[in-house]
Amino acid sequence: MTAQEHVLDAVVRAQGVLADYIEPGPRDCAQTLSRLYAIFADDRLTNAVNILNLEAVHAAMASADTPIRLPASPPCSRTSG
Image (cartoon, helix red, strand yellow):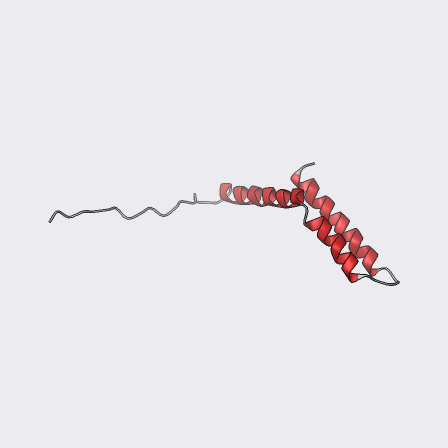
């Protein structure tokens, strides 16, 4: 499964949990939070989000008008004395 598919799957499952919660009838907040936590605390989802964030940063850097450069250190000068 790709990173995008992992994230989309998590969102769809979370939407289902929230849809169940807003249905008429008794609600269990603790159970709903536990179900959501189980979805979002998944290491595979965390890795997928990190991958997508890195891809976005790389894409932004690649499309920047001017190259991003790290500041150079000032030249070191020594005086003999």
